[in-house]
Image 1 (cartoon, helix red, strand yellow):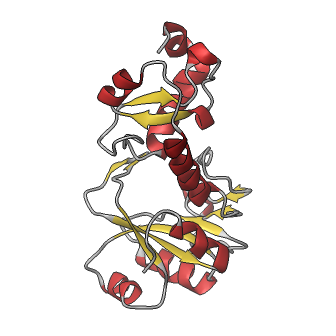
Image 2: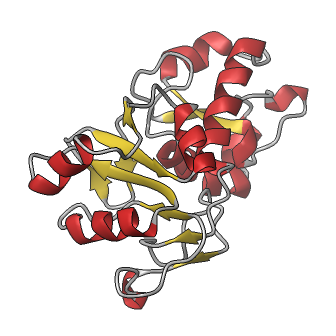
Image 3: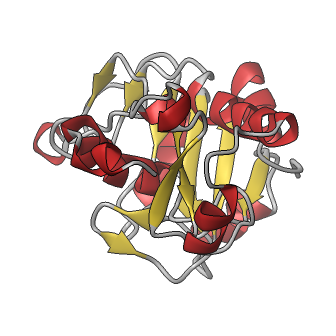
Length: 206
């Protein structure tokens, strides 16, 4: 990677966003990643926007050099990004202050606004507090329209979801969240036709 890419303010601003978006997982080999790579290399005119950056391990980054992204990898990344961003989410019900840049919601509730007590509308994105997810999950199921990312749990609420009719996809990537990582696996829940179709692009729906 050209030196100027590291020094560019846009690159510095987007690097962490991309690593968090991709779950600190290399988008080429699925191993842990601490660096990012340009889909279109800087030397060939590629920029430092988030759409041109992916999480990448050091080995894959070194091996790729200035090569352009192959068609099959492009297709896989496009498929994954569409699944997570094109479901038309209107409301992020549990966002950090300022929202999340890669969640294209027209509105978001922060902790100060109390998304659990506030009214929900349209298609929602829900990544609830994992310390007490049950009331969030129950409200999500009642709302019936959106995508949720929740942890696998031994609690009764998860047994009910697992054994119920709600479509879900096991998430094989280990995400590192803005407030730290978690050791439990996670699942995507989908409600509403387009949201169910969207999580189906991530993996097999059960």
